[in-house]
Amino acid sequence: MRYFEPYTEFRSRALKVPIKTSRGEYVFIEIMPGSSFGAEHQTTRLCIKGIEEIFKTRKIKTVLDLGCGSGILGISCAMLGAESVLAIDIDPVAIEESKKNVETNRVGSKVQILYGSLDNVREKFDLVLANVITDELLRMRGEIKLAVKEDGILLVSGISELKKEYALSGFREIGFSLKREFTDGGWVAIWFGLKSREL
Image (cartoon, rainbow, N blue to C red; front, side, top):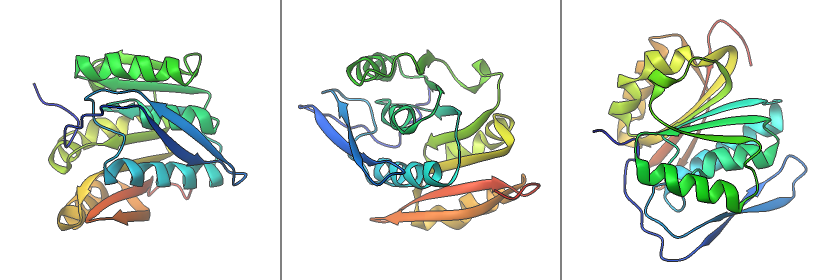
């Protein structure tokens, strides 16, 4: 079984992760102790930075968090105003930890956690998030595209700077265009739009 997360984390204590709202205020996400990916790694921070920028510029109602790990990215979107978030993972540990974190942050009315893969997803979303290693991203790129609305946004990370051009080329081949990129410590997050529409 392949896992979405690029690395394993172990948190011996709860973390409070800040996110900045469109009004410039900070709210904090509490991530409980555990071993699912997605709290302290650079790729997570890059995705949160991208999410902050996206919610400043667009009204996002629906979100897919692909390979949700700790659930932090989906929770971030819910706290920034998304109406509905579907967070999925193929790791049962991640599913259980995401559920706990969703409950801790009181966003259960907005965030649904699903054990499964893209095969279990039928709808399209305003925003699709995937913090996944580059080879897995490219393997799934066609399925990922099917989950993005025509005027939607794709935010991907898990990409090292060494593989950035490889990832850019792969997504451009299927109709995505680069809107913005975020870098930190040798890692990259990329905000894509579809070429047929301007964001």
